[in-house]
Every structure is written in structure tokens, then in C-alpha cells.
Image (tube, rainbow, N blue to C red; front, side):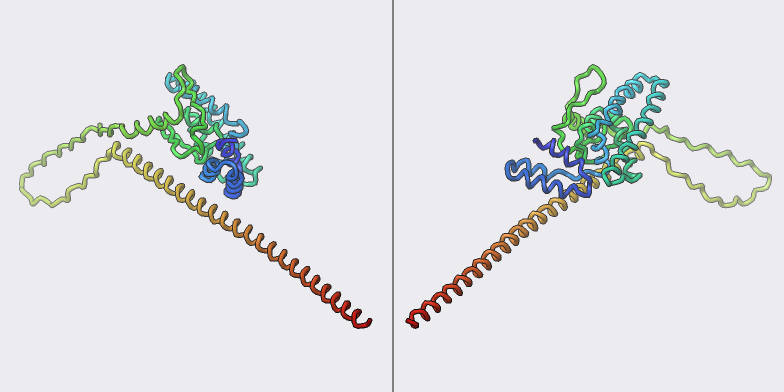
Length: 320
């Protein structure tokens, strides 16, 4: 069994039991395949929404939703309003039905999903419809974090999969050949890095000329007026850039938090391994002590018997 198969099985485990199950599988694999054991040990605990998605993928419940994606993208490309409305209505029904199915699976597993988690499940399913590579990712059963679709941008899959190499190429719903998922991630990063900054196309607002004062027959001292405070212009492109920067910072912080969580779980696993080794050593030492105590008792009994026999023999000799 390869790492992807082991990962799929572990990602279906209830989150509360994940670390213990992963540790057990890692120890079992360590005897025969240390490389596989290391890969299992590095497997991230899935986020609750990703766990629900993996449950749905295991049941094959996501196939129809993902297959709806190419039809939606084609309708948008053709600018067919009637078809878009029909497909959007169908998409909403499918997403709600799958979210409910995921909630039922989570409850049956003894780990009910919260409303916030189900919102992330819906967002992940919508992302799978919007991006063919995201669709392949959610169907793989290897998701470790939820996905989201931001407008027409590609869905960010960095760090979203337990084993990206095990995810099949995405089908774009057209005659174009499928693009490998790792190539899609590289091109996505390059596209974001090479994207030119947006220009501010907001037309410059010209100040309205003030009307000339009406001359008065008798000059009067002109009252002093405070100048009206002009509100700063709103720069839409700057706001978009700020929003993208904030999103990038939040994503980086999320990745750092995930890395810290992984490191903490690794340390916990090592501590559990040491604890288990010490328990085994203690059990072995206890068994050895018990064995030696039994041997001592047997030796004492043998010594007593030998002493009694010697005493009896000496008495018998003297009585002759």
C-alpha cells in the first residue's frame, strides 16, 4: 500500500483520533518501509471542512458537482444569461444538498460539523466547480484544508493536498489536453508574480468653479469662512491592491500556523514514542524483576530442602 492510499484512509478518521491513528500506522510501517513511515508521520491533520469533503469524496458524492463545473464555465464563456441562471440555480441546489450530506456523514462519525465548517464545505464545493484542478483535488480524497474561489482567479491549491502527485490531471471540459496539477500550480504562481500593477483609470475630478460674489452698493466686511474640507479621493485600484495584500498576508499567516501545528504534532508524536518506549522498557524490567524473584524463591526453597535433607541424613547417621 502506497502513501496516497494510507493518507486516504487516515484522512477519513475522526479528527479527535487522527494523531493516534497516524502514530499507529507510522509505527507499523517503520518495520518494513522507513520512507513510507516518514511520509505518514508528516501527514497533516485535516481541517474539519477538509475532513467532511474527504468523507464525501470517499462516498463518490462529489462527482456530479464537479462534472457540473465545465457546463457552468461554458455558459459563462458563451455569455448565455438564461443558461447561466439555470446552472446557478442547479449549482445552489447541489451545493446545499452536498453540505447536508456532509453534515450527516460527520454526525454519523460522531463529530458533528459546525455551521462555520459547513460554510467552508460549501465554499470548497463551489471552488471545485469553478476550477478544474480544484475539482480534481476534492475528488481525490486527499484534501487537508478547505478551498475557496476568488472571482476569476485560479483556486489556490498550495498546501491543500496530502499527496499532490497522486491527484489525476484535471479535465477542463473542452478539447484542450488536461493540465497536470503541479504544472497548474507553477503557472498560477508565475501568473500572480508577473501580473502588472493595475492603473488607476478613475477620471480626475475637476473642482467646480465658485460663483463670483454679487457686488453690493455698500462694501461690507466679508465674514471669514472656513474652507470646506475636501474628502480624499477613493482609489479603487489601491483598495483592490490592499485587499489582495491583506489576503496574501492572511494566507501566509495561515500557512505559518499550519506549519506550527505540524511541528507541535510531530513533537507530540516523538514524545508519545518515547513514552511508549519507556513503558515497554518498564514492562520488560518489571517482568525481569518478577522472573528473578521467582528464581530467588525457587532457590530458597531448594536450599531449604537441601538443608532439611542434610539434617535428616546427619541424624540418621548418628542414630546408627
